[in-house]
Image (cartoon, rainbow, N blue to C red; front, side):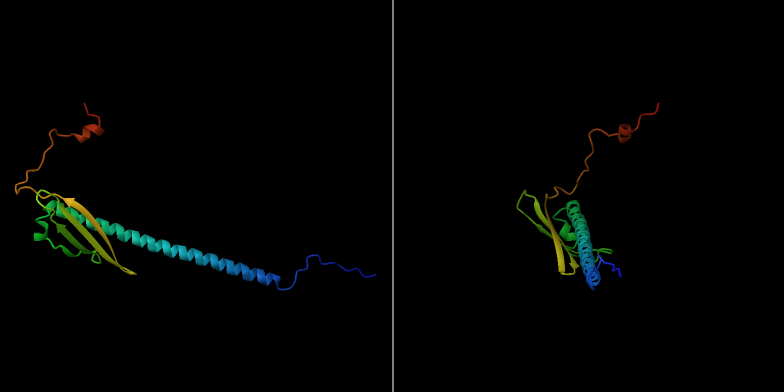
Length: 156
């Protein structure tokens, strides 16, 4: 008498190979998605850094217009040019427009920099009042403020 063993775990041939191929395709899609997301996030980080640096540089130029005065600034500084190292790839343009008598000047600071698509730019606009008089007396506080006494107990 012959006893046959029944193989209950019988699978068609090649099924394991199809599973391996499908797993590899799914893994490839997942890796491609991660690489795509990573490259986009790096590009966004670089763009954000450039915008941040450009806003700092625009603030610097607007502060100089405020310090020198909108009438004097174009006489002693260039209103168009590039920044010094390490920001030599950034260009600036300062546009100062008089609004009329007893009105503040309209000042626009435009900062441009190169990127992969060409050139990017930001423009910051503000109003700056004219400096009145040549002899500006620095303001002094009415009462001298002792900052140390706020934070430290006085020693006896």
